[in-house]
Amino acid sequence: MIYKPFGRHEVNVSSVGMGTYYDPLWIVTSRIGLGRGWAEKLRALREGLQGGMNLIDTAEIYGSEPLVREAIKDYPRDQLFIATKVWSNHLRREALIRALEGSLRRLGLSYVDLYQVHFPNPRVPISETMGAMEEMVEKGKIRFIGISNFSLKQTEEAVHSLKKYELASIQINYSLSHREPERDLIPYCQREGIAVLAYYPLAHGKLSLMGEKLKPLTEKYGKTPSQLALNWLASKPNVFPIPRASRSEHVRENLGAVGWEMSDQDRKELEKITGDGG
Image (tube, rainbow, N blue to C red; front, top):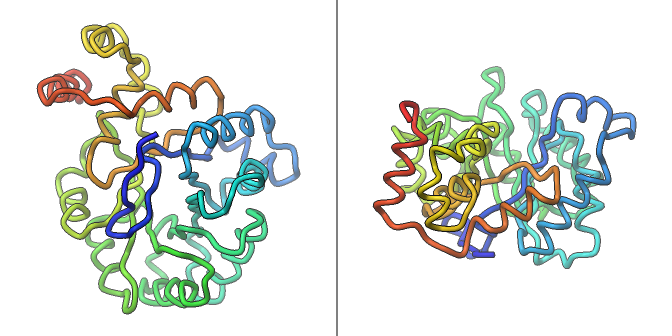
């Protein structure tokens, strides 16, 4: 596994992580202790951990925090980078603190490395939310502050609302076939040293199914379409793809997405083939 600094911070994070949003049925059934495919998902997370993936992303609403707790229980805490999120109806100060305590309890942790606002809430001033976040950093409950699904304007508001600490990251939909963030948000994050967690890095599996179109590149590098797509993201400064970890074989494939490089010409060719017009 290849590790990169997380934003401007002196902490090394695996260049490919693991996401734990599964599906609506999982969310519903996990609430009553019947998470579908628990054992298989647990094996997938452990496969990634054994391969050096130390970044795991979850959220209070996903229903996967207890699963993450089970996966990480035998690993040294300082070798892990655990990220979770607070839902948009918990962004008032007191609600956020209660939500964080709930996440910590479900994760079996005394702190999380990254606490993220899952979605902005126009009814709650971002300054109140960021103030509560900073308070939790002061108390040692979180290390870094992040946001998710924010526009550029909303991101700037979050940055300006922070008084003591920097915004560490933003999580967005970003892949070879969804490059809209490159218009403004990605350049802003690169300038400001804000890490980008890329969800849907395989475009809901669309990029995994482009074997015929990508045959010249897959044969040249001996890699799968998914590995090409993840490598494209992971090789970008400050970008961390977090493909879903649901099956061990998929995680093993994802582990093979780093440790090698495409030529600039091949990267451009990959972009051309997989773009909206590809």
